[in-house]
Image (tube, rainbow, N blue to C red; front, top):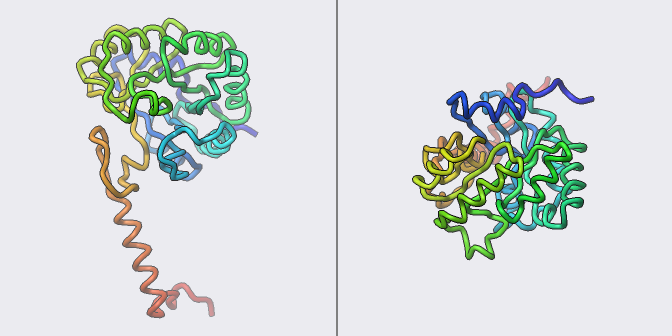
Length: 266
């Protein structure tokens, strides 16, 4: 049995731009994480194909499958009560023709509690976006750095082709996308695109001029040790907290301090 409807609908999400209200989004990949993010009042939760890297340990987003995205989205959906829930369409689930894209996106909506899908691309994906929207499937677009095209783009680099990026964003809007992620583009270009579009722009590495921002949950909390991308701001260093807690537990067990009297039954 599905829970009550989400508080934020696709039209309400889009209307936040005209209202001048900044939009916050985060990723989530499991039930416990989604509960925490949703309770904090985030407007949008993305079950991102980034789970391929931060959950599965791959070096890019290409290996994650449609079935795996649905598996994670279903558990996230059971936790969300407030936010708009969006699920990434993984590679190559929307490159197989419009009808296959509708079939795959339809599976995501039918088998999870999400309200929308996200797919990478602009001009070249306009027909697919229009097809999904005509089938009643809300679509968030994604332009700029497109991680699924990392091999074609030559790595994770800032995208600076102003003509191409503006054309992609306008094509996505014209095709019916209700919002668009702008990833790793110059801030001034993000400001221009945001001004040109009627739909909200969600930035990641695109400056403060976007209508909203998104970060990967693991990056926000500093759960992943090592060098962070420039566009990430860790709001905590939980990898140190977790390692410290596990180390203390290990030492307590070795020294016979755990379990103590309070954790023992008579």
